[in-house]
Image (cartoon, rainbow, N blue to C red; front, side):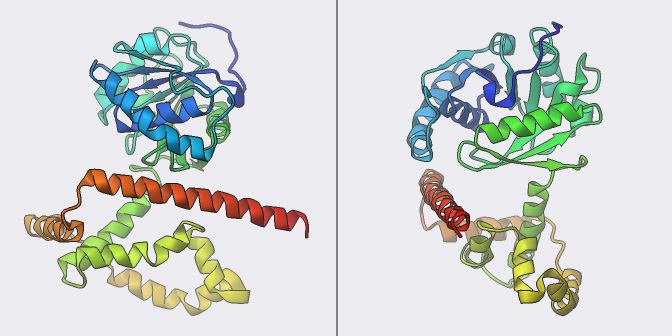
Length: 328
């Protein structure tokens, strides 16, 4: 399908399609509904409809606490096994298909049968390269990565990454759209496997695995070292800003002069572990000890409850601080 219709303003999208109804897709659907959008959800598995319904119901109380848009309706969605039925008439598409190049490319071919050419298609892919996914498309400029962090209805971050043929207008529109639905988008200036945030996570986890594999610390103590230490600061500011503060009145130049050489020495001493059977056993056994018979479902509930408390506190305190600055 091709038309001369123009894109809606990012904050004026009324109908979105969520293609792929796993954990990520259902979470996106809940978020879009909370912002007053009508949502069409697609998944080849008919059983996904009930799973999505349950996920929306579970997420809705948290979304109410964060603030619903006027007219937000948790029932304003439909389910389809054919992605074309979900995408027909949509003004934005969030794609969450399995992490396989062939699956996504076949899906894009189907979507282009019904989508107007100006409709942006954002992929939640956590590591695939958009330049490959958009190759051969009729309107490749509207395909772009919009990678969230789980769960998307709570975690603000979303990474926007254009492919070789993605237009600047698409990137700007998508960034503005995500802001309009309450996300905190960042734009990556080039494509790399895993994007940015996952690579930062991978770098940290590599050293965490090395610490366990070499007997430096237990799995539980490694996690405590982050959750009860730098992780608290990282919820407020990123590592560059934190180290800028560590430099005191001299800021980043002072930090680089005084701590930089030591940091370079630590870099040279960082490990490069491999996930051998022995290391996998160490991680698995260590996690079993740390769980203390708690289930993943219990952990997920605890994670989401604490996330809500953290997000609400940060929102309230940031507003209070800004108000204080406005009156100073």
